[in-house]
Image 1: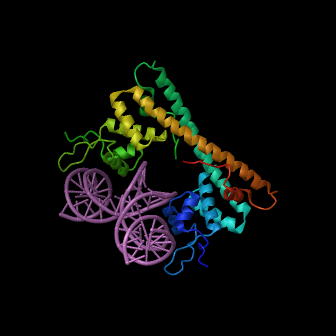
Image 2 (image 1 turned 90 degrees about the horizontal axis):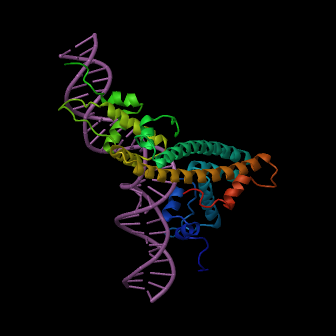
Image 3 (image 1 turned 90 degrees about the vertical axis):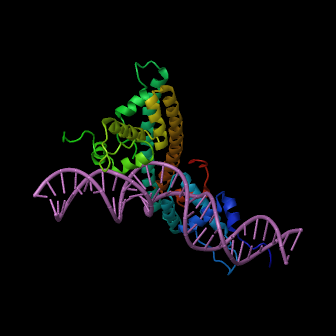
Length: 143
Length: 143
DNA sequence: CTTGACTCCGTACTTCGGTACGGCAGTAAG
DNA sequence: CTTACTGCCGTACCGAAGTACGGAGTCAAG
């Protein structure tokens, strides 16, 4: 019965998923991950589905979901409510597209300016610096 | 001689540029903006080029430059070193493009998943949730 | 039995770009 | 003169997503 008790210690869980131990604790404090019961004076043991849950969180983060959104997705996961999950996903996709538009505009503006800087045939000033002084054509680019 | 002393008060400067008074002070603490000399026990007066400087900062921020980068650009402005400014701009452009690639990948993944959610013809599970559990095809998307 | 690695727990600190607060002083209007 | 704004200044706080730290306790090996 003294087999290596089943379940991982927090350190092994963290290593298995590739995150910091403190990150696991942080997720617990945030209510994203349960705290397994602790045998009095003992060490908590984490089950396979805790590992799965942390991986889920990391996957969602890679898609740009915030931890608040992840919490929501996790609840939907438990309830298997695809429609609601899809709705949350759609809202997030809108936000992603908004950020994409902003970045595309920045990319376009900046790359044009840098081409002009590179040509070096400007009459007087640095086109980039001049554009920042003028402040034109770049309203509400980031928000 | 008691004309409305020339130069703006901090409040009017802030209003002119459309930022908070606290923001002006914050830029001063960060060394992005000088603190005009203060007639003992009096009120600081800001000149036209302070206004220009704050506008410059805001323009650069709209292009996604961080305040640290802005500080750098401001120094280059003073020295009129176009090549150096362009170099900084190019580095920033690289970063912008990296973020664009990440967001594009997120956009693609998420929109495909949501189409599948919308079709509702999945055998069992929610495609979005399932994908988050699987964690496949979304490595190193954000960093 | 001691050493070293690990865990537990609470608290504080980090970055970024500000925002808010509180007390004091000076200025403007009635 | 009083009232109401501003300005000045230092300090604390916000959110997001962790990271770091210190002092315990526990566990396995030697």
